[in-house]
Image (cartoon, rainbow, N blue to C red; front, side):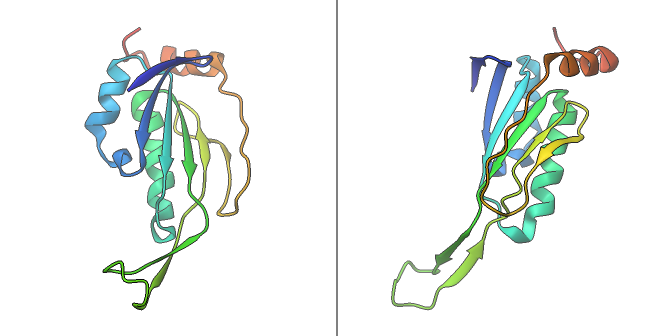
Amino acid sequence: MTVETPVGTAGILTCYDLNFVADSAELADRGVDALFVGGAWPAAYSENWRLLLRARALDGVRWVVGAGRTGRRNVSADGDTDARTDAVAYAGRSAVIRPDGGVHAALDRREADLVADLDPDTLAAHREFIGSLPE
């Protein structure tokens, strides 16, 4: 899915979709300038979340904004509220990633606001340097 925004054409992915390079490549072929990703990655996989955000920025030469769920949630295997439950801690680690894959701004696991400018000149410079994406 793509939408027109003040930062240009934006694409949207959810959570585990970051793992699928073909989905990312399709959005790159559509000229997406920024990719927005909402995720609820378990804390144990927080490094994967950050790595995949950076990879999707770099492979599409675009901004990537990842909004990661924070906090904890109790879950049981069978949905029985009387059964023993385990707590799942979420990674958080929301981030804004530059088109070269570098981290522009980031949070840790705490609940907080992350505000960052997605500079169109930075995007243009990286795309000119790479020179491999459709105009």
